[in-house]
Image (cartoon, rainbow, N blue to C red; front, side):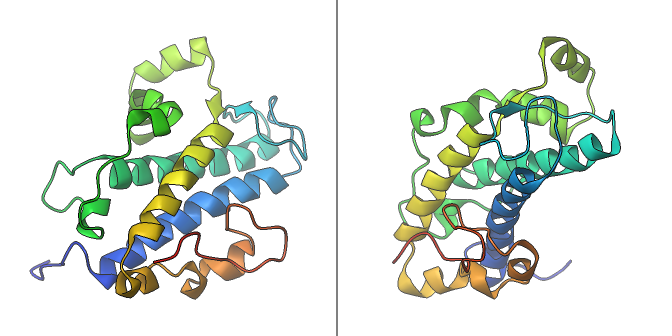
Length: 195
């Protein structure tokens, strides 16, 4: 690991693009599942949902819920934090003058920060408390908040850097078919901003 990687490089942009793609793909897969999570019925618009392991179908859905939340957590830090460690990648490394959006633009995600950290990213005793208070996540609100921030970020990129965030070049396109936030089935992926 002797090579120094530049934060605002095309190489790192591919990692950010991956996070955005997987965030979108996991949400879209949840919408297509034919399973009742106790909170989602097939075809629902995704109200609040939880996770569990009561049946094989619930386990499968929980995988996508947790995948979505994990990528949402990573993107929250990318867009909304200044970076705590020298190798942390943030939006400010790609967009000159980037400022984290006000909390009012991502209040649902901000309100879930501690829970995401304690219940998803780390194995803690606090998970037992979350079980008692309910495990529901407002995935639709989290998605909407992050999509707005993603649009703002992509629209703020220079023309050169915008090309680095072209989600169509990733293999995930073949997997998800519909990873764009507003796409209808079979519509190709599209970058949600312009430079």
